[in-house]
Length: 310
Image 1 (spheres, rainbow, N blue to C red):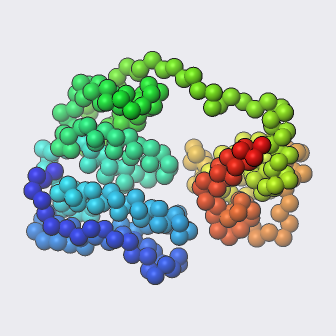
Image 2: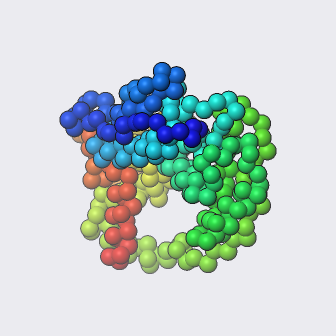
Image 3: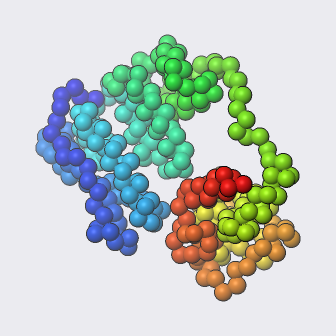
C-alpha cells in the first residue's frame, strides 16, 4: 500500500440506458503504477444478475468498495490489483480483493465475510501486513467487538476473519499460523426466537396462507415436503420438476452438486404446471411461475407479514 495519494476518478455505473440485454459495468479511473498515468478500468456485472434490482444492488456495493480503495490511495498495476511491493501484503485490502474475486463463494457468504473484514478494518491498521498479525491483535479485536455484540456474534465474526486470513495467505503462497484461531468465548443464548410452532400455530398459519397468499403456501410446501432451501427454490425452473422427482442442478445447489428429491404424494397433489413454459422460474416474480426471478427477500417478508396477521 502506498502512503502517497494519487489522482483518481470515482466509480460510476454504466447501465446501457437501462437495457437488460446489454452488459452493465462500473467504470472508474485509477492511477496506473507502472504507466505513471490515469487509466480507465471496468468491473463488469456478473451475468447471473438478470434483473434491474439485482444489477443496481451489485453496482452499489461494487462502487462503494472501489471508491474506498481509491480514497485510501491505492494504485493498480493491472486490472484491478493494488500495486504494492513483494514486501507489502496489507491484510485488509488484500482480503477485500480476494473476496471480490472469489468464484467459489455464494453472494450471501461473500457478503458475510466482507462484513467481518469491514468490522475488523475499524480497529486493525490499514497498513498492517498479514505477516505482522499476532494473536494479540485477535484478542484486542474480540474485546472491541464485545463492546457492541454478544459472544455468539463475536465468535462467528472472528471465525469469518480467520477463514479469510487462510484464503489470503493461500493466494500469497504463505504458510502462517492463523492468529485468529483463538479459543471461543462461552456462549449463552437465551433467545426464544427459534421456539417451534405448536400444531395449533402451524394449522392457523397454513389456513391463513391458503386463504390469503396461496403462492407462498405452495412455496412453503416445497420446503416442508421436499426440504429444498429457499434460495434453491427461487432458482428452480419448471423443467426441473419431473413426474416423480425434482432435480436441483449443481449450479444452484448449496453444495454445488446436482441432486434429486422425490415428490411425495402430499406435494404431488399441490403441483399444477400444465401449460407452463418449462423455462419459467418455478417461483419467479410474485412467487408464481414466470420469466423473471423472485426477489431474494420476498418469500421471507411475506412470511413475516403472515405471522403478524396470525
